[in-house]
Every structure is written in structure tokens, then in C-alpha cells.
Image (cartoon, rainbow, N blue to C red; front, top):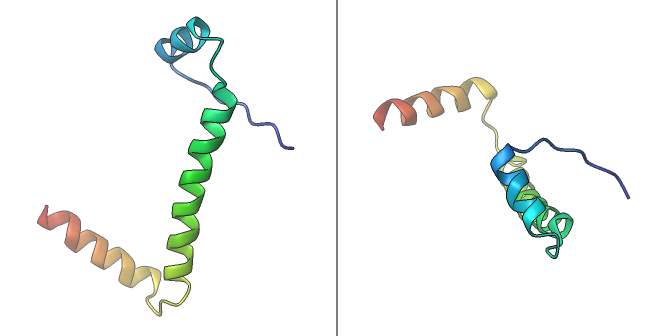
Length: 67
């Protein structure tokens, strides 16, 4: 199993320290898995795309400028 070290804001650290009964490792692991599943889904969708990075940047710019 890999080890991951993260830095958290002091406010979060205080809450984590206040609640040692909570399995913070499990919460962070679950959150990472949720994010990974989203990334894998996006990778699956984009793997079949024929757009070039230049095209994607133009589309992104157009969308952002319209917001």
C-alpha cells in the first residue's frame, strides 16, 4: 500500500484532532476513489475524441468567455 502525505489548513487539523474516533484515512481514501472514478470516466470519453489540444483550448476559451 502506498503512503500519501498531505498538508491541510490549521482549521481542518483542529477538527481532525478533535475527532480521533473518525477514520480520516478512510474518508480521504473514499474521496480520492470518487475523484478517480470521475477521471477514469472522462479519460474513457476523451480517449475516442479526435479533437486536438488546440481545439479544446479554443472551445474552453469560448465557453469561459460566455459565462
